[in-house]
Amino acid sequence: MVLLAVTLVADQASKQLLLGFLLKAGAIVPVIDGFFRLVIVWNRGISFGLLGGDQAVPPWVLSGVAIAVCIGLFVWLRRTDRPLTGWGIGLVMGGAIGNVIDRARWGAVFDFADFHIGRWHWPAFNVADAAIVVGVGLMLVDSLLVEKKQAP
Image (cartoon, rainbow, N blue to C red; front, side):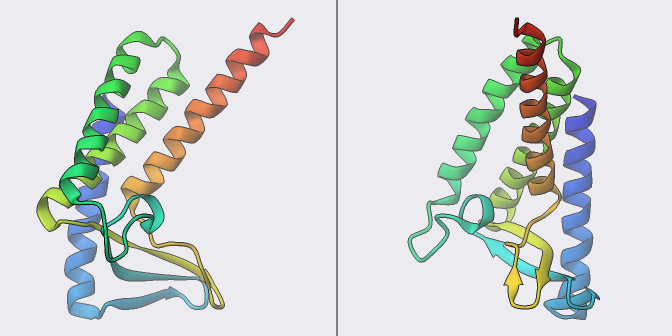
């Protein structure tokens, strides 16, 4: 639960600080020329902007799904004794709740990290998105370690 709180605070603080900064400095601020910049992107879809076009899924639907997933993850967290799984769940829940807060505040998720090489861009993301990816990765690694120990 500590990792959930740390993730949530880091996510919301970074969004608040960077949104204010970017609104004053301009919507695009180069950080590492040709590789990384800060941007303002309002993601109305799910991860990496999927389902976020003209017919975007309403924010309350996406938030409802995220809350349902968090409830399931909380139940799993209460039942697991595996540290990596627990850390992964904390990261995923913190990230999911951070993005739900964005949808409640702004109707979309504020993404700001834009990595690119030439014209190739990774979709913009934020601290919550990074936490979700790392959290899922930890849970996958832990599941592979369990399977490896149980193999004959």
